Image (tube, rainbow, N blue to C red):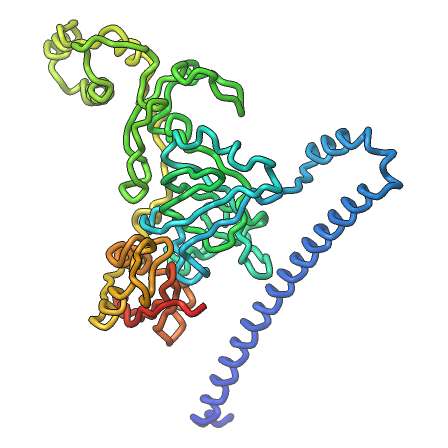
Length: 441
C-alpha cells in the first residue's frame, strides 16, 4: 500500500501548479502581444507602401499617367482605399491619457481649441463660416496613443469591472480602425479656431472631420416623419424653414449644456402664427398628452369620457400647429434603447474629497487672464472653482483601468489637468486629492 503524501509535498505540488498557471497566463499574454505586433507591422508596411506609391506617382516618369489619376482615385475609393489627412490638432487641458474622461459629458468644464490647418484649406477660416449657428459639434478624431495598435473582438469596459463584451458594443479606443467620435459644446468660433468645452480628447489629438450636431437628425426623440424632410443623403435643404425644428435641451443631459436658441433652429416650418395659438412647446406637450391617452391608457377610460374627449373643443390645435400635429410622431420608432449597464454599471460613482493642503494649493492658481505675477495660472480653466468641479467630475467616474482597480496594490494615482499636476489616492468608495502642484515644463 502507498503511503500518504506528506504535507510538504502537497505544498510543493500546489506551488508548482500556481507557477504553471502563472506561466500559462504569461504565454497567453506573449501570444497576444505577438499578434498585436504582427498586425501593427502589417499596418506600417501598408502605410509605407502607400507613401512609396504616392512618391512614385509624383516622379517625372509617371506624369504620362496623370490623365487617368481621377479614374485611379475613384477606383481606390470604390475599393475602400482611403487616405485621410488631419484637418487640425487638438490643444486640450488634458496632457495625457491618465485622468482624461472616457466620455465628453463626464467633465463639462474641460476645454480645448482646434485650429484648422492651412495645408488643408488655403483659407482655413472659410470652412467654419456658418458653424457659429450651432451649439454642439461632432468631432471625428484618431486615437493616436493606442500604443502597438492591437485590438480584440471582446473587450473589458472599465464600467463593467472586468466583464467581456463585443468591441462594437462599446466605445473602446482599441478598434480595427482607431477612430473616435465625441460631441463637444461649441463655445465660439474665432477665425480659423474652434473653442470647445466638454471634451474627452488629449493634447495633440489628430482631428479628421467636424460635423454640426442637429437634434432633428441625430436624436431619435426629435425626429419627424421621413416624408416631411425627404432630403437626399449628404445634402441639406437650401432653406432652413423647409424642415420644421424643435427647440429643447440636449438629450445628453445637463453636462452637455443647453442648446442655444439661434434663429436658424428656433422656428417652425410656418413663417407666422397667431398670438392666440399655443406656443411650440405647448404644442409638443399637447401631442405628448394625446399620445398618452391612446391605446391602453384610453381603453381603461369610460366610453362616454372617451367620446367627450374626441369632440372638438375651443382649445384644439389649429392652423400651423394643426399641421405640426400631423408631422410629429411618438411611436416605437421614435425611441432608442441602450445596454442596461450604461446607466446601471456594476461600478458605482465615487465620493471625491480634498485635503486642506490640496485646497490651499489649488487656490494659488490664477485665471488665464489674471495679471498677478509670480503665481501659477490656468490656461483653459477659468478659475480654481471650475478646476475643483472638473477634478470632481473626473475622479467620481473612477478613471482607473480594471487592472489598477482590482489587482494593483498601489492606490496612488497621478494625472494632469490644464497646468496642474494632481496626486490623489483611492479608498473604498472615495477618492481623495492629496496634492495639486504646477505642471513642470
